[in-house]
Image 1 (tube, rainbow, N blue to C red):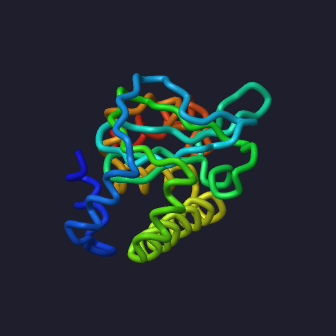
Image 2: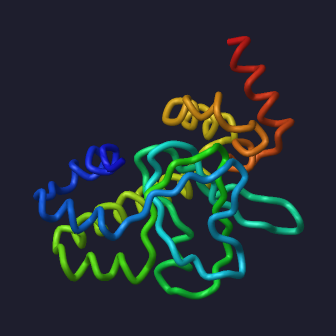
Length: 191
């Protein structure tokens, strides 16, 4: 159950068998169906998720439309981080795009782990740094790249998601309409 967790975290730190036992005692395993809201806008995000299997979508709702902020896949941590870290109502929703197998930890248990295992602080910093880098790349792409360039980058970095995620969600993530995405894809196919 923790194989992917330790594979993903091994690039940042390695845990002893005793530390692994403590970590595993603080997480719970949860299977969640597709289209399940793990955290909702206006509510406090009380849990952090590690994805063993499945996809999660983080999105905002504006004027009745969903705007995708990020798509999390296997071996990633996911949450509505702003709400989770501040333990205050959030402005995002996190839902499953596929049936998902998750390792789940609540805010209090995560803080207990920080106190008991110092390496967890290193892991949290490294995950936060990666999230910051991803957010900067997304923001830079919105400012500097054309919609076609954003699509090409998405295809190169996350091509596997093109077969797993509905295209209207990908269009939303890229900041374009589904019609524009369809035109871009047709134009690139002709090249």
